[in-house]
Image (cartoon, rainbow, N blue to C red; front, side, top):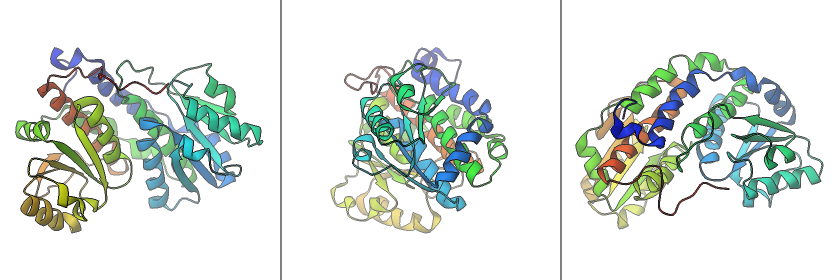
Length: 333
């Protein structure tokens, strides 16, 4: 994918993916410092939203908090399930690009009714219902997306959450961000092996495996929206713990950031056992068909996500689908 060829630029989806580079480059971690201080005082953070507004932003934040040993408990669920919890002692973030997602509004309204002052909103629009029911609202700077599949907003939401965790863990996120925009750009514009594109495009089902940090799961959703392919997210080693019984040789498993200690098992069970194709997205060499990306350290998940987007765009073009407008999928309102 690139920002010059009309084959890509005719689609808002591709233009918005490329906008992600500027979103990362211009992100200021200091904007969340005051919120982070308030959240640290609470000690518990709950992140809710629907679809892409929750999957990667929230799960990336949870993994960062646990990896860095932040003195903060972080959890996430969809808004309807969140509404069944007692969140009166949590700081709660509700993410909704439109600012009117009914499920998210209901959670914040309920918290307002019980007097929880630690209600945060994250949206791409101003003067919304979300802002009415949140005590503090962050407005995304990336702008509204025209394509149905969310991309640049997902990245900015994740950056906001990661910046909060970084403040609380006493990390310098500005340092973590150094050079990462260029590496995301490299992942977005890398040439994908046509054999990989064709294998995934022809697969009856595309499986994504990897860490439960939202990258593989978000790409699973994007496979539905962008490539119109059936897909499933297999956390950790789920791909080699039973589901291989129903996999076929034409299926494809895409492993995000494969763990070296588990690659032999994936190869033995999936490549030799099932006979299917395994594709890896990784910053290091792997024994599989590999889409190599630059190592961006703490920002690696964003690079892996960008490489996955790049692959899905190529698959969508191969299958001649309208990348901007799925037939049935709509933005959450």
